[in-house]
Image 1: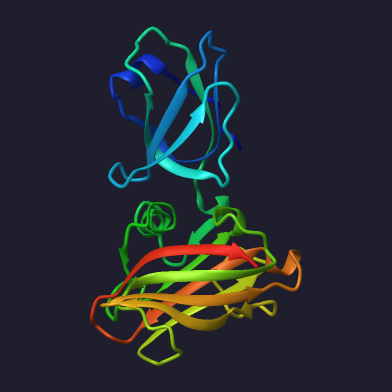
Image 2: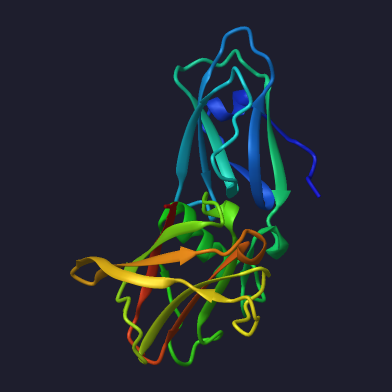
Length: 246
């Protein structure tokens, strides 16, 4: 259910106030009340209050981002130092629970692995991947396609990080596959594994693995899933995920 609009005063933002929502939220649009003078707005947002991203838009029309924003902290700055505009901005938000498009196996507390994975997805902040002895012992994530900004058709997937092994070896494995269900099971009869094409970038310990995913149809290819499993005790990290339709 979409929660009521969150109304925040532009005047408080002009003084650099950081707003914290009650929970991690998905923002699908940002609208401003009609102003006599159009404003160029910079919207700063973050999941954890540290790694931030920003978007620029005009107050003339409601702003709809290319893909939904995940955030709990945000603030707004303007292109000039004024303080006379106290009209409100509306955020069209939905509480970000597992049913909203992300499911991390074994993540009983959504504020741990879920936040870390979304920081990789949106802020390119690295997260440590599980090693033997950790709980859960591997990272398995299922997410809906709209979070990546691609259509469930033919697409290329880049998975980047530190200490990744792109080849199918026993010590460390990375799998990318598609299903029709938002869950973390590889036992479904509609699982289709994406084909590893190449290691496209290796700089010191930084590695980028390239996968090609080819969907039969949108119904049986509505969810993208990742699996990261290691039998080695040395650290490895996931830092970046991106996708483009081919």
